[in-house]
Amino acid sequence: MSKITTVQQHILDQERLYPRATGDFTALLTSLTVAAKIISREVNKAGLAKIIGETGETNIQGEKVQKLDEFSNDVLINVLERLEGDRAAVAKAFTSCGPGGGLVILVHAFGLHMRVLDRKLGHYRRYTARGPRKLLEGAGFT
Image (cartoon, rainbow, N blue to C red):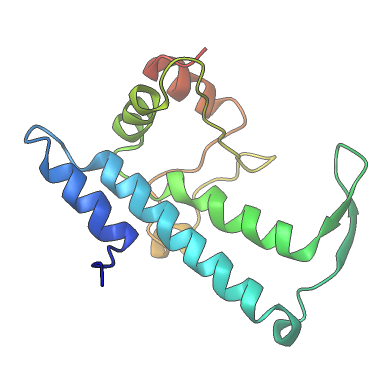
């Protein structure tokens, strides 16, 4: 029987291959993994949590917004805001994407000011709609 490697173990094993690694990209991948686990948990209990169905809103493409989509979006938005080294993580993502690759960052529609709850949740910043543009361009994305 082959050994099962978790996502986190794989990430850490790969980081060890690069002695000059700072851990910023590892932090990004770890945060995304945790977000995926949170979303998976909610999907598995969606019927019990009453998050199946539509929110009553319509998105920019004219589609009905689903409660699970809205929940997933809210979880993933918080990933970069919780990373202390967001610039380094995005720069590493750029080099990992390869030619023609891309990165999607979602931010809140309105740049809210840092609140006490944000700090308690471990946020280092709140992005505005334009904030990630400088972050991405600084990493090499166009």
